[in-house]
Length: 397
Image (cartoon, rainbow, N blue to C red; front, side, top):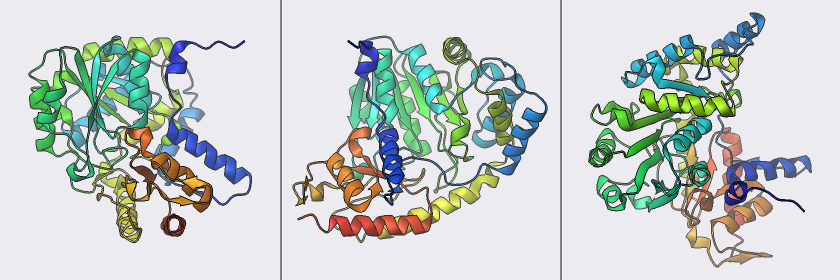
C-alpha cells in the first residue's frame, strides 16, 4: 500500500507542464502537434552567454559557490537593476536560484505561515497557488476581467485586506494575460500596502524585457515601499535561457538572508556554469535583446488579427510577455462527435484532439472561461495553428 505525504497530495501538477507532456507523447506517436502550451522563447541563447559558459567549463569553474551566487555575479545583478530599473540593491540583497520559480518559493516559504492570507489577482501564474498551499497559506483571489485588462486597482486590493493578510503576489508583464501595470497603477497598489504593517509585495517581473509599450516599471521604484517589496527576475524569458535555470530575487537584506538559509537546505547554489552564463547576461545592454521583443511583437500583431477571424473569441491586445488569453464561453454547450464543451478545459482537450494544437485551459490560471496559448513560435506555426483552431471550432454546433 502506497502512502504519500498530505502536502504532495494537496498540490496539483502544473497544467502547462502536463499539456507539454501530452504534446510530446502525441508527437512520439507520429501526430503532427503544434504546441503553444509552454512559455518558452524559441530563440537561441545569445552567443556571449554561451561563450561565458564554455570558458567556465574550460577554466574548471565547477565547484560549490556561495548559496546565493558568487559575489561578482551578485554585483553584476545589482548593476543591471541600477542600469535598467533604477533600483539600488547591494549584493547582500540578492539571491540567485535555480529559476524564478524557486525564487518565488523561497520568498513564500520564508514569509508565509499556515493560515496567513496572500492576495492573488486572477488570472495568475499557475504555480503561485500551489506554492502557497505548500506553505499553508490561504490564497485570497481577486478576479479581474477582460474589460479591466486583467488588472486590479488599489481600491479592489484594499477591500480584500484583513488582519491575516501577509502578502500580495502578481506578475507584470503578466503570465497568462500579457497585461502590463503602469507606474500610476503600481503606485496605487503601493499606496494601499504601505498603510498595513507587515504586508509585503512579491512582484514577479520575469517578463520585464518583453514589453511593447515602453520601459518596464518596477514595483520597488517607490522608495516608501521598497523595504516591503520582493522583486523576482531571472534570465529565462528575456535572454532565451529557460533550460539554464537561473532565477533572481532582490529584497531587503533580512528577507534575502532568510531565502539564502532556505535555499541552503534545498538546492544550495544553482549550477556554477549557469552562474557564469547569467553573469554574462547581466552585462548585456537590454537594447541588445530587443530583437527578440520586436519579433514577439510582430507575432502578437499577427495572432491578434487571426483571432479576429475566429467567431466567439474575445481577447485583449497584450502589452507584454508572449501569450493570448481569449475568453471562449461562446462555445460552451456546443458539441462535435464525442465532445461537448462545458469550459475552457474541455475546449483545450477538444483542440488537442481535433486540431492537434496544444493550449492550456484557463482553469490553470484561475478562470476556466478562458484558454491560454503562447505565440513564442514561428509565424508559420502560428498561422497553421490558428487555421486549425478556426476549422475545428467551426465544427462545434
